[in-house]
Image: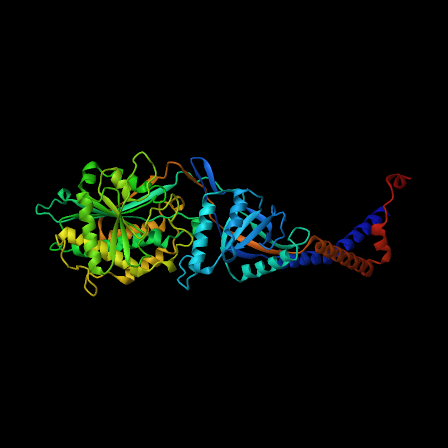
Length: 562
């Protein structure tokens, strides 16, 4: 009798479990549907740089986001401590951002939308000069502030435009997005930024040995051509520096290519050694240049007749400037400037001399040639810039992109440097002789200039985020190997007052979420439906009595014993 009773109970339990299978399956399907409806739009975003100077914090100090979206249409006095404020550059009020940062108001995060024309490598229609100036002001403000919330940049697209339009509409109606009202939720799931341990700076140099009767080129004087290749900007993953200093790097490579052709023939090899150097650490007081110079033995440094540094030569029309530290009356400076001036006159533009005395006791190095001057080596910087940039400024900003650089300007700069060097090397000063004339075998290669400019305009080059074997560094090394000899790489640690943090790029997940009221209502409907379905399945498979028995309170232990 007991066995029959146990068998019956097992049978009922089995039927009960079988009746639950459809319900469980339905719940899984519903959950899957809900997940699909809540799928995210993914947008690439670029984080504001985080760094320290002598322990003082600058830039964005956080990286994770998980807040609702808000716009500039929010009501006055609204609490934005748990909101991500979306600011299109086209609508940016720089005073509003300045007040928010200076007053340290609470904000969940900041997302700045940039026009597509500022995307690295874009050579389409240009934006107005007003937008470029506005972006430069914003970048300066963000770089020199201590910002206690995540700040990201993104480029406008259909998804961001749609989201922003909806958010503006709701904010204008006073329906600010919250967990209660719903709206758009922006999520970036990344680990907190960590310090970059011992960031590396890499210098690359190559030689073109001159010709000497006894064959010993080590006894010849040397002329150095130098350009810093790395950048610095508000968003390291976007800092390509097409003009500063991509244009200088391109000009150096083309000058090296031209003179390699001349020096490949013993009959046209000059009686000067040519030293080409691509240096790192330019935005940080040209630390790479300093370490490279100090790595040269004293005899080598003393053999340098003079050095020409190339900085920002891609956005000028009729005038370039020659910046020097020694007085204009200095014989070497006068000789260098006269050489440049004569060539410029023959080419149809002008150069001007700008003298800035350096203070040895001040650690700030405004121009690359100042590192040479500190070691008593004559040097000058050729640049379109009238004044030296401030520390960490004009070194690869967000607005310094390909569309604002003209390869014609670079070509004119290459001709100026190459012709003035050749006249000095071959003793043609004061003569109207163009060795690198257009349509000759030694003409500047426009295609070469353009291809390298476009390549650099798509390659972020912020030194602390470049590895020792970075493809860019290997490409520059190979290029110098093609045109010069004894190419070598020097790798040093970037030390001193700067500390940098990782996490420069992330994926932004945009969710369109419903309000809590809607979620509760949906839960109630689904729950009622599941209860009704469960009851129907039990009644049709086992009967009404079994359904009632499921909800009936089981007899107590004492009653069972009785």
